Length: 318
Image 1 (cartoon, rainbow, N blue to C red):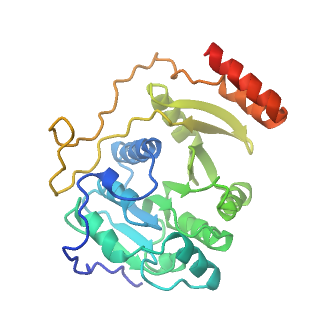
Image 2: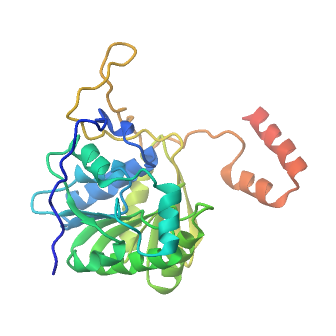
């Protein structure tokens, strides 16, 4: 077995140093930060051992967050092309269009602004990951690499092989209109490969090949205590699926940068927003525009002119 590269490319002084996680460019919403925190803490509380893996890292925002949950004796592996050429013309075109400024050096500068040591870095297509990470060794896998169906399908097969029996996998962009290949691969795995969805947010799907029922029940118990998250349960492919609306989500505490924070307007250093106090009896936050299911029916079934009129009526009554 080949082992991941732990060498760090020297980082020069010309790269900006983030003073907080929000300074790192990337797409990692507060609702998903809360869910990463819940799943990873849940695993720690129940002594579920295993390594962490991220396929596709961009400039390191979610990797920095994940690295804070690494325990002694565990490995964190990050796989990305960074500056390497893409393995085929389709992937090369996607990289040129979306990630033209992506570099491993920038990732390292960002990560080392928050952590003392880099994760194990695999600078290669994600198709090599099963030769670099031991089978059944990972408790948490985050997949946010290529959006092309063939590559995502391969990443799913790799995740199934690398996860522990109780491990959790997270897919980014499973519903984005510019990433139909991700949706096809993920729902295809639900239909044919035994992947059990746990919950979805606006951008990510969380699943497992393990005991989904117990984990989903514990997740619902936690969601019932949150005043900043709306959730509902749908029947999908013969099993419950938790939908989470996190537009009002308050992010958990972030890793602290080793660099000096910029003074805020009131003269105080920037600090992460505190997680609000929760109450099991608290009702979900009020939402404008009518009940979620009714608004969905209005939007999907009625003519546009009538839809707009009804939406305005909902808003006046809210």
